[in-house]
Length: 424
Image (cartoon, rainbow, N blue to C red; front, side, top):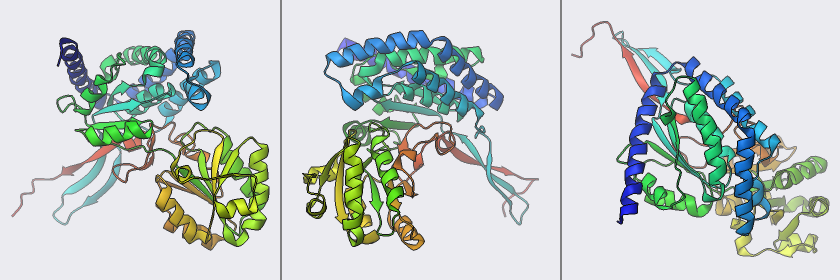
């Protein structure tokens, strides 16, 4: 490794040690102090709004010069409203109950031992993410709420925006009497920094959370030497059952696909029950096409709505993040569940039906992190779940699943109180 690499490694190891000190400070802080820090972050973001917008403008200029456009550019872009949304999201996190020290369960054994399971911080979290500068603010607030220090490593396309937001976060921490080592950000775009994080920084990192494309998540899961909380792409489905209300189905699928095509909760595949496909598909296809969505259908779907493009095998496993929707005709709930099991990512899947038994069958058979009945997949969001914000949608089964808020960023310990008991 060259001198520059050694220097980077030294800086990253120092960051890990500093984060461990920050984690200790947060764990020992009171809930009120953590709350004050989060509120101060929001205030600092409002005060620094112009600096954040100026930084974002530089990122946008560089991104456009690099050929970035469409949904990816939308993910990167901040305006006055979105900066205010950052501050409001942080204030929502400040208002949720502090999870640290909360009792999950408590019981007394026959020998008199009092045993409690109590929430405790994970320790040091490393967050590796792409494109969205709002993740910088959300991750900082949620980790502080849960008593964790965090090391942030955003994408090169939004480095200037992230640094400006982080400067506000640091001011908020210091204003509340907490060290700015509680929330640190990697200042370099050197990809070797990611490798250093994946090494675990000499066992200083307790959890790594990747949030980005398939390539990033795959690399983290393959190379990480610390536990990983996976966030796979949103290959989300809406299944319109034969007993669906057509007006309800139309509103849900148009919203699920087109409200914001660049979010991970956007629907990417429409499944139509073959028992009523000739009745259901034409009006749904018409509504989607009128709203500007390109449809790519299987043979059965195109036989009913021939204007749509023929789907390829890749369409069933593509997160478009664009106004494009794959369409397939399936045989009832079982057929929908089989399609989702074959091609889905375990993120978010929905059924539209007025048949309660069909809804319950779908819930039972579809093993995704979020399963919805008669609602848009765009509700796959921590804020919509009442978590204040989210650090991502976990698609693994351990240790958290679905929207990851402050509570999901804690672990637990057992506190055992005795009166002098000894074990015979």
